[in-house]
Length: 378
Image 1 (tube, rainbow, N blue to C red):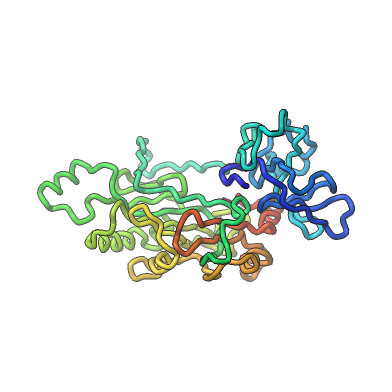
Image 2 (image 1 turned 60 degrees about the horizontal axis):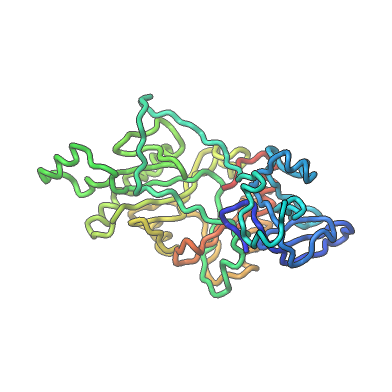
């Protein structure tokens, strides 16, 4: 059992594999994660603790275990490849857990126990165009994108009965754009409604932002220059969203609003990972209407329809899931015309059910990213 909300948890060793031409090491499989360990140190069925990719290990604890030199800068767990085998997590021997035994169960979170945290990249601060300081109020209808888990943390999510869509995962910066219900009507909005001179979308406003932060709205103003605004203007996103929203409002299906989610990528977005571009581009991958995620088929149609006509991420496969098909889009996949590994893939059940969405990160990308100081994956 894995804990998809944690980067350090109790887990059971399901399998131990020999590594060809290696006398002193072996491969240990814990849930969906792989680790290279000393031969004989663990056995199948052992209950242990693992720290996965992006776990930050306190220096005092890593020194105690003797693993500091194997970690990334800042104490992060790294991915390595040795004799053709990937090691993607750190197994913490139970001897380092005081009173370990019946007190802990498979899946228990151990981050606080060891002082381990999940790595988060630093947030960039941007000033508003006017230079004025305002007390920004987030619009509750402009929802943050669902952060889906790494499939290694939810092994068994998909079966061969599941019909899925597999898309290329783009390494850039998350973006969201929407026409959603206003948190509060202005005085003039109320006046227009009273005299019946308001337009059909008086209750709604255009907003855009990054994954966590609203960058601007019709009601509160906009940042001066940023990549989200640049993309919005280049693709005419505001006008396209208003056109689609108006159609839905007239049909009575707009509800709390319409939000599209995507990735901005290219020159200057992620250090040393620019897809060979001299400018920046946008590709969408999800849509919510009235706060509900749409199916993969409807989402594709929306991005390609006359209303939006916006790029959609590359669809690699649609059909029944199986491990071989999944792996074929992860390993030995490179950005066209380069030897730079793709970041990975996203797998979604075609229904759009958020309980059936996960990412698979290419381990070669993680190795390449560390060697070339690439901006962090998310």
